[in-house]
Structures are given as C-alpha cells and as structure tokens.
Amino acid sequence: MLLLTGATGNIGRELTRILDSHDTDFRALVRDRARAATLPARAEAALGDLDNPASVDRAMSGVTALFLLVPGIGLDHTRTLLRAAERADVQRIVLISSAHVLIDPLPAMGTWHRDRENLVRDTGIPATILRPGGYMSNALEWIPHLRSGDPILDPSGPGRFAPIDPADIAEVAARCLTEPGHTGQAYHLTGPDALTAAEQVVILARILDRDIKIRETTTPEEAVAARYPHGAPPALAAAIVEGFALLRANRADARTDTVTELLGRPPRTFAAWCEAHRAAFTD
Image 1 (cartoon, rainbow, N blue to C red):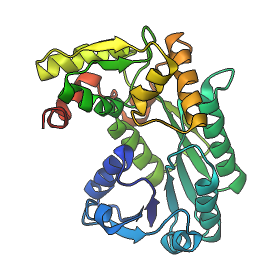
Image 2 (cartoon, rainbow, N blue to C red; image 1 turned 180 degrees about the horizontal axis):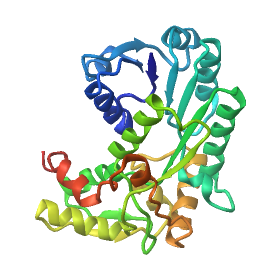
Image 3 (spheres, helix red, strand yellow; image 1 turned 45 degrees about the vertical axis):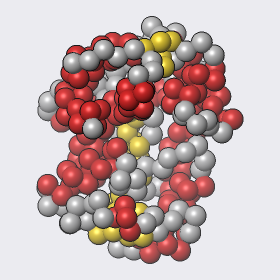
C-alpha cells in the first residue's frame, strides 16, 4: 500500500490521477472529508492530522511506500510522519524537496529542505529525493490580478528559471514509488525552458488572447506580496526576499534533462501548461 501526503495539492492531485490510471492502490492522508471527496474512487482516504501522531500511525498501518510532501517551514510534521513510517516498517520514501538545496551558499529556504532531507536519511529507509525548481502552477497566483486588472507583481526581474509542470513531478514520483532503481537518488527536476517572469506573462497573454500588465516590485514587502498577498511569517518572508534576490542575480538559474532521462520524453512547456489550465484563468 502507498500512502500519499499532500494528495490534494498541485503535485499530489496529479499523482493520484496517475496512480489511478495505472490501477495502483493507494491511500491518501487528508484532514477532512470534503477534501477526500475530490480524490479518485480508487483512493482510500485516511482522515488524520499531522498534529495528531495517533491518527498518522493509523494512516500508516500496512503502508510499504510513502510519498512525503510537507508544506511550511517547520520540521515537526516531517518528524511525525517519519516516526510513524519507522514504526510501520515502511520500505520506501519519495520526498519532495527543493532545488534550493543546490545553491551555494545555502539560502534559508535551502536549509529547511536540507534538514528535511537529512531527517529522511537518518531513518535509514531507502529513499528518493526529488528537487524541483519553480512550479508552473505558481502562475495561478496571478488570477486575482487578472480579474482586477492590476499589474502582476514581478519580484525576479531579469532572473531566469525553468519552471516545471507539477504533473511532470508527479509522473517522476509515481515511477520512483512503484519501480526499482531509484532509491538513493536525488533528482533535480526542471522544465525545458529558462524564462523570466515577464516572458511567462507574454506566453500566458498569448494563450488567453488578452493584454496582461506586469511590473517589477520595488520593496521587500511587495516581493513577499507577490507570493503571499496576505503576508507571511517573518522567517518565511525573509527567505522569500532572499530567494528572489538570488533569482534576480541568476544564481538560482538552472535547467536539467532529468525529466527526459527518467520519463523518456521532454518535460511539458509553459505554453502547454497554460493551454491545459486555460479555464482556471478564464472562469
């Protein structure tokens, strides 16, 4: 039995679809029944809360492989899941980490993800670490600006990165969960093209056949608001500002062929992602 955390998020939702299409039985750890209702019929929903270790132990019962995706910047939830995995004698873990761990010197965001990677390694459970860069789905955060007509905030300016479709991350994760040969590996995953935010906006505008305004941010507060319009805790806000500064300087720019090597096809382009998600921007 596979257990998925983050099953209703951008990557997890795609992973449930892939596993369902391959007739793979899996269990999803969810906090409420409403979210469980969005899962494929094949999914076994396990209601639980990462602040309640007993509920995590129940969800982990009989599990042989764990898809580990924990949001936020703390480590407590990761520890809770890993302790439950050890007690359940889980045989394989696939962890969603971040390409930030590859930046030297290590930024705050990279430190948090490195610490999670180390917690997984310390269990001794065979693991595969996935280190994606920026997600194409971050463009969904532009929807309120499109509806209001306000300019999209651009904290990265001339900085380039190769955003990846969460569906490609999910397909790699599915293979790592179900196929041999991936334990002990750390895969840096990117999309095919290194783009600035402004170039992404041009692509989206072409797909939607409309003008879209964009302007560069001028203060750290605006940089944080570009990702968290309602604000973020101080440590996270500082890490976001640091990350965008690195991106502006192109220090975070990298593109790999790992997706092609693992899946036997190139990763999807940003234009293809925009076409597939057109309705989200127009509804």
